[in-house]
Amino acid sequence: MGEAALCEACYLNPELLQDILETIGDTVCRILDRVMSEIVVDQIFVHEDMAGHDGPLFGPRQVEEFIVPYYRRVWSLAGGRGCRLFSQDSDGNLNAIISPMLDAGINLMYPNEPAAGMDIVKIRERYGTRLAFMGGIDKHVLRQEKSDILRELEYKIPPMIRSGACVLGLDHRITNGTPIDNYRFYIQKAWEIIEAESPRA
Image (cartoon, rainbow, N blue to C red; front, side):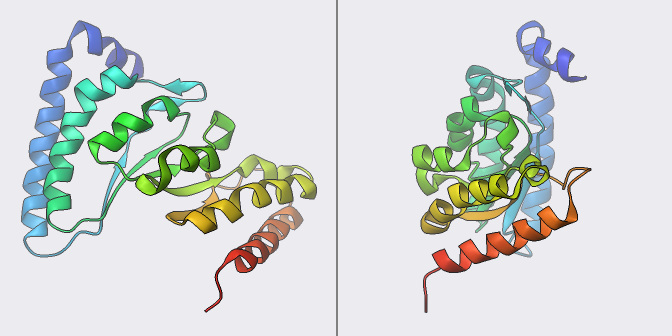
């Protein structure tokens, strides 16, 4: 449909969206039912690039109307059979819809794009460990000064290590023009901070 037509359909043709999501949900649940009768699935992954720099394409009301029932249906089946992680991959600023996503069953988000306002430290303070994270380290900072890299790591790594439920890493691929020396500095300092924060056996 394309992003614009999809957003318009929330208002102009909601029955079509409900039908699409019901069909996808039927298919996913049939597949999961067969697969999970044989093995335990540890993680369900959805790739829904549904946000831009300034916010999500769907607001909380649209998420609750269209996405939540579909996700809940899938997660009810998978979570009831031992699945532990329901992860969503979306760039952009998802802050406005984190709460309904949690209600839908999502418990892991990535890449948590800092340039779009996704601050994993502040999000953790608000939602606790109801929501786990992957990524969250600003990829753009690697093209800046080493002091900027260190500031980013010192701000994010210690509180996330202490609270857990986080796999720290860049919020996306390494950007073109990143000096190799900066990347090496990032890796070295990240490990130093992680080791200093990690509890001793």
